[in-house]
Length: 203
Image 1 (tube, rainbow, N blue to C red):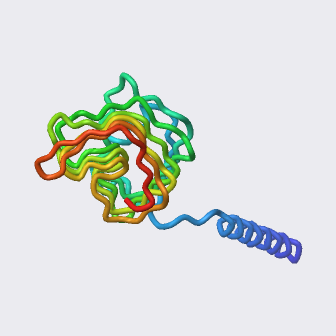
Image 2: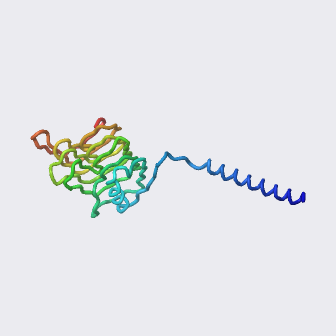
Image 3: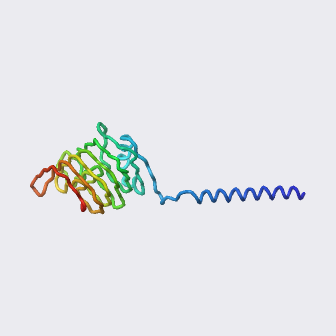
């Protein structure tokens, strides 16, 4: 009888020990912010699908996007990212070969970067030239309410009022960013074009 009780007690102790180990393992797991999601983009297909998903403005909220390689969008049906509310890590990679020429305003690689949006260390090379003389046209963003850091745009850019190498209109924060290429815009009723570098310390 005593042997049976001792055997039962040993099983119970082992069970408690196992539960304790499981609890410790769970506590050691990395903690992420509530609702935070990380995705990795490595090719044109994944980037195009991501842009389409961002047509729902809450899709990118609390999202971290990691660009893991250079991407050439030549020959694809890429459309600009409508709204971005997360953090986009370019990691120094280049997205090139895109032409944004649709009839849309605002117009840019990102149409709108929201107040929670952050673009970091991203290099863009392409053409942003809406089919009509649209307002709020920029190489990286048509309108920026968020943060653009250590990023650049080079290529061809044209629009009407509020046309800028980095952002057509900026209401957000910034760190030094850089643009270079052919810029056409409009001030009141005067059309202008110029070829020059744009160095922005204030957007």
